[in-house]
Image 1: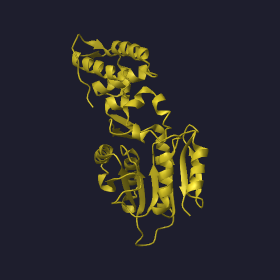
Image 2: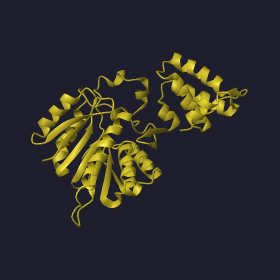
Image 3: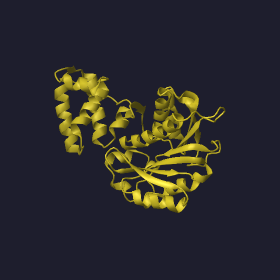
Image 4: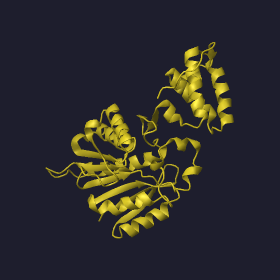
Length: 309
């Protein structure tokens, strides 16, 4: 989303603008004021942050300076950097983001990594019998499409081509439109079938699958108002997981026997303090299934895995 330009003035240098912006952002409560300023100025000037850092003496004309001021004002009101820039890097790709969907988080990359490992483990093993169905993956509640698009791009780069099928569903039609835009932007729209529906209740979809992946809302309701101000710009329904944060997770677990193939699995992102409660929920909903929790790169519990018998 472009920043609306405000007034004009004399040319300033990169260094002067960054110094002033950093101070203003710090006073406004930003936890990363210098980084925020560098990212916003790079966005306005359409250059990498490294270029900004390398040329503090470079002049900035009145029009880009005014656009920078407008972006700065939005950030000072708490709007996320990703929404101001209109993009977020995730799994080595740049995704379009806006208020239609949750901003992809770095910790969700662990979910994609585990899904990729699962697919590779199957498709790189013994050759599948002739006439076998492709490996089928369902991204439930796809949001911006970051998970399914990242998987599609990665699996194609690994040469799996027609060996997999991806499905992505989303209750919010606005978010679904954003996911489709991202799939088109990364050239994988032909590899993903999109449909509207709440969790696993999707009329068009897709029979039984080998793998379900999901990043459902898992923040407890009473915690949502205490999140950093930037989170208030994101859709609440993408964050609020009910009283203990696991309402949506439980609904998803309950529906898995109807959609997973024998020997299939589900990978579900959870909060870093929810490992025990999530495994208990899995044991209650799926007593004959195996479950485990994978840590993210910071060593915190992050992904609940359940395996169908």
